[in-house]
Length: 165
Image (tube, rainbow, N blue to C red):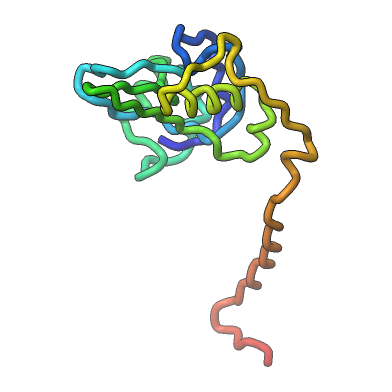
């Protein structure tokens, strides 16, 4: 599933990636109904939220759900949308299904989680209060590529009426 929804992260686990991160709510294209390693061995759910009914408004499809997803949403099953993974031998991974909206980097907790994850992945010590960073509106606007102008929709032609030249 990959709908846009306001995920409410009400609690966070005790993990180096969550140091200094407070519970938050944010709109993003949060993918859920993820498949994880058998028995979730080595996996720590980091961001978990309950998708709302808006996440299953579209018809079934490759990116829009199926009966099993609809049932999970109806049951209000919590969904993991960010996780830490530790492999045997010390390898680490961090999965994060958000970050589709550039403006979300302006949210301190969203940004801190990602920055903490970078340190953790590199086997560096994450500070007790997490990575401190400041981002302003102008920082977020700097270096953005201009968006191409949207093309006007083509005029619909009535069947049987020739085009004007």
